[in-house]
Image (cartoon, rainbow, N blue to C red):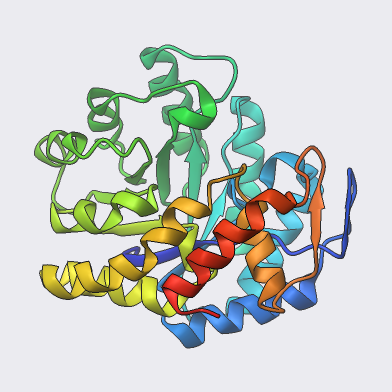
Length: 295
């Protein structure tokens, strides 16, 4: 159900940079229709790229509910519901279930640096409390917390923990996790730059930032890799490689929102402490856009 190119979609906002920049549901609908038309296989709402850290809990739940209504069951909706408080993560996960999301994506608790046992207990309690498919999310570059393969394997024995988004870019972990889990446990990349190899090595897909701005090509690359067509996947990925890198020249989602604005898909809105893209980064992004053939 959750394979191929899954977009970690931005949360569109009206123009401006402020603590409370207004959400733009009209632009969100435009993005949803674009992704369905271009072949994206699923949508993650209110993840890192969706600025979950700057939305209130009420807004967070409202965006998930709106996303489910816009998608209308055409592709899966995965709701970002992770938090560094187990109570808050449970609350957000309950919201997602009530809204009709197909699954939840739960980032490792950030800042407070739990132990591996703390991670296990955190995810175990959430899974036992809310009966919805749950995907673990490991991104130590953001959270200062690395969920090790052994912990992922241990958690995979819990029925509604169905997979992991692994964003370390450490491809050696794929075999470790695959060997210790059932064949239906999902392995999703969280690093666009290594996604092609991740899938060719046995991964199921990607939760992608690049898919925001090049959805068709990202889907084609992933499907080629899933089909075992390394040559075709390589060719497409060469076009996307500039985007994979340039989308992180400033903190995500600053670059991806800038590109979407230049493509006339969203307004130039973002919430503090994120700021709009600096002038010095624009040339690199334009170059990556040209390489990918999106301008």
